Length: 170
Image (tube, rainbow, N blue to C red; front, side, top):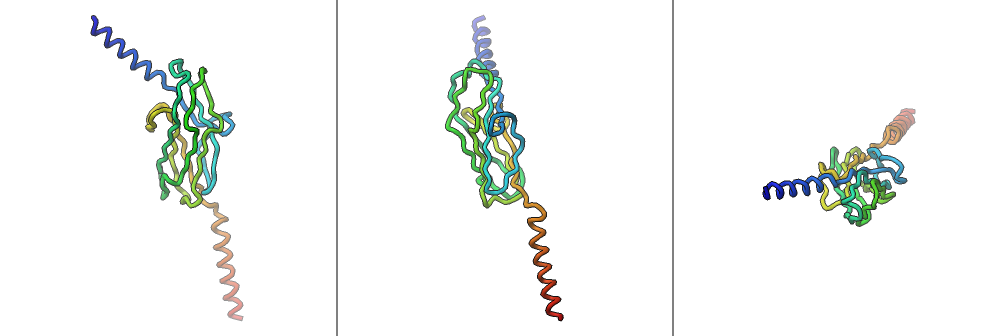
């Protein structure tokens, strides 16, 4: 009977630890709603907020360190193309939800290759693992230059070559 009580107590502690994990999300800069996947031009920076939902009483007042991770989802870029800046810690309030407004900045390097998709994960807790419940992630796309940005200079060069050839013939 004593062993059964000890096993039940250990199971209860494990379940409380599992149930106490909050649900995170990445919101827009003003903290007014979820941010979708981002498209940034090389050299751009975006400000975002970190939202914690379903905070349990066990977590009230806890000081959690921010963590972040960048992975290249596809394309020629590298994880070092993205810089994430967050406060050192977040103190969990005594409430069911909390939004750390404007706490996160994500920057993409000016020389980052276009067409790369990065997966950015941000969490508040000791370790960040992609499948872990206390981290949220978004995809950051390195914008591909628009068609006119490439086509107009090419057309201008071809036009000049045609014009010069025509003058040469006259």
